[in-house]
Image (cartoon, rainbow, N blue to C red):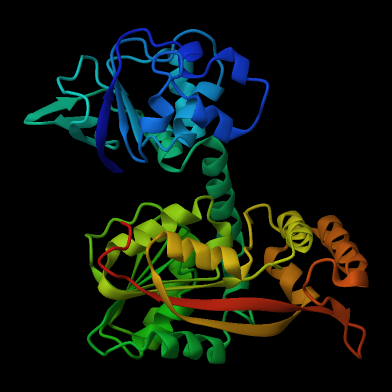
Length: 414
């Protein structure tokens, strides 16, 4: 992770009461914390600091009480990183757990307010002007938690890897994931050229990667689950596809150079991402200017109550599930990233309960709980999924999906 931003300079012994005064601790509203961040030092700071700016401090930053709201205030304010000579130990650990990038440098950095500095979190280095400072490199396990966005996000990712590892073979047989009409429609909408290079993130068993391979020069699929990659590589070898490679890689940490691919895709994985905005920004970064970004995922209702109920059921079935979004929210994420949507195509399919629950295989007790909840939702269509029984008495629902295809312009985020 590399961060570049404008420096704000603070001295030694900045305590947590200065970072977020105690009178604001009665609320849980993160925006209140952000609006008053560092008010105890500079009452105007919150109104001046910009997204991605960097705090550069002296020794013992974050001393005083153990309040985690101090870290939350800094993160919510959009500050990209805190660099300090030393941190108070509790603040340091709170920052790791909450996912606030920090670098402990061991000395005072020579820079002026407003100077642009560059930070390499993985290597623990800071560049200010012509000087490079080497800080204390974090142990791998702490750096992994930080890079994943904090302890909760890290545990969610570990859950995803474990679950998808166990169920990789079941996913390879899914009628929805393997649907050729759906795969062909996605590729058709991207209008690939034979010379194109494609990156398919969270590729799973490689369904979309293989479909692209029939029409482009080179396809790379990446996934953070080894068992998924093993199955994809086996299918590739059986089909004798020489233009497809697979790599173990997290969607939030793509190890490719800027502008490496003509098309960057993600199919039926977005609802597992703890930081979807970050994933889109990484997809945009590795995509060429005027290249194509395509995200395909299931949808949740635009009705907030139905969406909430739907996602609660999904999380009971599969704890690695984060959230299925209404289409308007997905489109908003594209627009926030500066992407111009050129296609928004809906595709709906009937999904039988037994197959759907079998893919996750949560165990008999949970499966029965989910079944009862789905049946209870039929009245008034509480989930927005049109849950129903067919003529043979089999429970099914309509799986609503969207294919969003966008163009990356020069103004798109990175």
